Image (cartoon, rainbow, N blue to C red):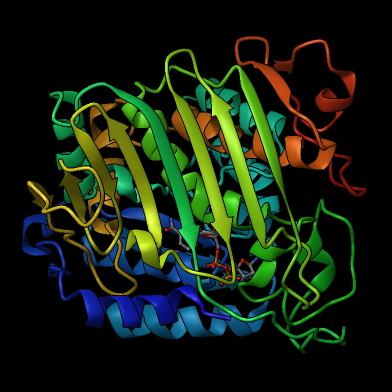
Length: 436
Ligand SMILES: NC(=O)c1ccc[n+]([C@@H]2O[C@H](COP(=O)([O-])OP(=O)(O)OC[C@H]3O[C@@H](n4cnc5c(N)ncnc54)[C@H](O)[C@@H]3O)[C@@H](O)[C@H]2O)c1
């Protein structure tokens, strides 16, 4: 299987287009207030966010929580290298909230834990930087949004592509009519890869509290394909490629559409046609989302790239003047001709940070600014909730084997009790599903 990291390395070398930018000016932030920050979910991405926060000069990393002590140990080492300080570590994030009273919580757990952590954190008085997708079911996302407003706390969602320079330039290009009238957007992530191999269940490694890791989701046997990092391909904890990568691109479309539109009808098909490992997310999926005056299509396949179209990742905005490709490492490119082999007439380079080619420092700076100016952050929870809803409606349709009609004001599938049951899930006791 080709991982995102493999893709990054290959893509970076091949494309030669990446314009990596250095760390943001720590000097500018030398006199900035340092917020007491607690990290919940000390894995790959949580460590990236915390490192960017520390490097910005606005974060005092006071505590780390993870249900896996092996993960906390790695992040602790990184924080010690960056700051010379040793934050306190916790297994249960609720003890972190209680004892440390952080001003900011970064939540980078697997998806199924985002709602409870975020809601508990805002209730405890913290602003929250939470990762995408915001939740595993739609009504949890609504509850997070309402809880943020009720507690008057800022909740920034980690969809950093909204602040990426190439994406901002592309959005201006589209809004100024550069691509003409757009009627269709196709979003996609395709990776070449094999069928994979099943891995037997085993005892959890020492230091991992597996019961707490599963938390409100069903308690399943430990399997090393699930943790660390593999949860995205298991539907008890996440929503596969659509819920993982898909939310980034659906969020770009939500942004382009003005953050106030939702699909009236969503239909998805797909399945597991190729993969033979013990993940259970679809290896092939497409989703059609019907909006008032445009249509969105999502596509992914986990075993074949997209060579004829040259791009494996991103969105094509199809307009009367040509096709805009909004990508990641490739930046954004406009093709005015009939196909992608035509000469581009406009391009914006990606300007991304290492590690892992992202724009977390800019999004963190926006988050701090939103707290200090008492305004909504750029990737406010309401927007992240809406973008996540697009993907979760796709998962609901796939599960049902038919389309669903959505009413976002009522947060209901119209006249469809079966679909409405999928808007929430049973939580494992003693966890309690968050009510709006
Ligand atoms: N914005 C982006 O570009 C981007 C990129 C990668 C990952 N992510 C998101 O970041 C999140 C984490 O992904 P990852 O790849 O870092 O996974 P990971 O497995 O490396 O890290 C998740 C960590 O959370 C821990 N955890 C589980 N339950 C917990 C709990 N109750 N309390 C504290 N810790 C708990 C796990 O033990 C693990 O160490 C996901 O939501 C993912 O979608 C976002």
